[in-house]
Amino acid sequence: MNEFAGSQHVIEFIYLVASALFILSLKWMSSPATARHGIWAGEIGMVLAIAGTLLHHGIVDYKWIAVGLVLGSGIGIPLGMVQMTAVPQRTALSHAFGALCVTLVGTAEFYLRTPNVPKFMMSVLSMEVILGGLTFTGSLMAAGKLQEILPQRPITYKGQNLVNFLLFGVAVASAVYLVVHPEAKQLFSLIVGVSLLFGVLLVIPIGGADMPTVISLLNGYAGLSAAAMGFVLQNKLLIIAGALDGSSGLILSVIMSKAMNRSFTNVLFGAFGQVQAAAAGAEEARPVHSATAEEAAAILSAANKVVIVPGYGMAVAQAQHKVRELYDILTKKGVDVRFAIHPVAGRMPGHMNVLLAEADIPYDRLIEMDEINGDFPQTDVALVIGANDVTNPAARSDSTSPIFGMPILDVDKAHTVMVIKRGMSPGFAGIDNPLYYLPNTLMLFGDAKQFVGAIVRELSGGH
Amino acid sequence: MNSTLIDSLFIFMLACFIGFEVIRHVSPLLHTPLMSLTNALDAIAVVGAIVMVGERKSEFATVLGVIAIVAATSNVVGGFFITDRMLKMFKSSRPTK
Image 1 (cartoon, rainbow over the protein chains, first blue to last red):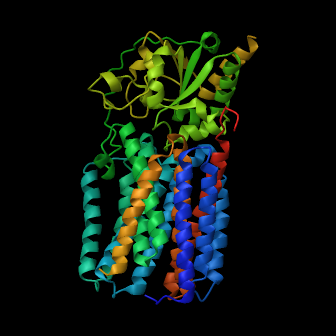
Image 2: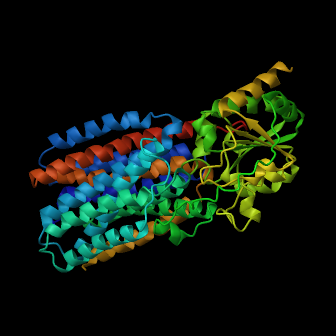
């Protein structure tokens, strides 16, 4: 390591300020009122840190740094402008980019230092490239699934968990060997290669409905790999930023796994998303009640309290703006309209909130599951738009159901339930939803956007 | 293990505790922007890549480093940009004080 040059003290001080700004940035995210200050704090911290780094005494050539910064900004701007419905895949892609950076720097560091790598250094370096490598390919797979380039259905085969476990074992064992025998440098490329492959295999068996957990987990891994990189480079700012990102991702994965009734260890080892080949046998035609847009409009305008339950289907149909029109017209008629947000509705944590906020629905109308569940018995109409499993009462009552025990929105307790749905096909997990056969449930068959639009027309025409 | 590494471990542990405490208080309303923000902050890894490219120790390291700078910078720029766009959309129905 280089001795501290004069500029190094300045850089360390700048990093100290940047670390404080990063922590403040996350702290201000706790409420929508202060969240935008959080971005400014983060941006100032980032600019300071990058500017400070450029003072580093060891830097002899700025040309390629400038090229990288300019190219990266050029790619970053369009990635910042994607549509809100594309945010989950954009997020997955950015996890991949973050992990790519960490893996490449780790790889280069190894070849610069080998064979004189101290044991501790080698251990964190291996951790950096294993986590970085699997996050890179895993996130690319997740992004591909979310963008529907890859099939959303889980891809499974016999002995999948065993293969994954063995691959991970090979990576860890090689890393341990390399720590003990630093001269065996050809093992390093094996570690990187196996980690990349492991990332692919880890994510292919995971279906779309499990994406919120996977994205959070990959977020956590990306953070931890960056923290490991901080250990390798002895850069405290990087350790702090990585630890913050890592803990954020892990907290979100815990919240998501709780919302899906899966244990955290289950999530950590990637054993999630193994959708049971659901017993789709019992296909007897049970009667459902359906209604037209006209009837739905009449019921809604007679209601005092309406709770709208959005799900991924609303995002797919891009129905959020029509839903806003419905919200406006009902609110004008004096109906109390609120939105019930299940933690895993959509494809990433908070997905529904962003879509509804984009459609200009005030955020104080978006109510979390625990808060709103007690209100359903006093609710006149629960309108379910593109949500399925998160409203399935079998999770409460039927211990044979694959989703038994998962916390759900108790929409079935509302006086009237209306479900906008394309047809009677079961949800993603292939589980039948008894909600649809309840006497107080009305099925509104059609495309979410068109159907909500039709209700809005009825409501505005009727006056 | 020398004292710098021990120091680093202390910093890591404390930062994890701060992270857990701070993130726990983030409203579920903002989980999506939270993720894009932490992603942007995480891209601070770019500083490691900058030093590596600037020192020009080997061609190999420089090539990997430049790709790393591109990847991380796109996260910095894109991450802050989209987080800001998202947060601008969150409006309250009550008049702002």
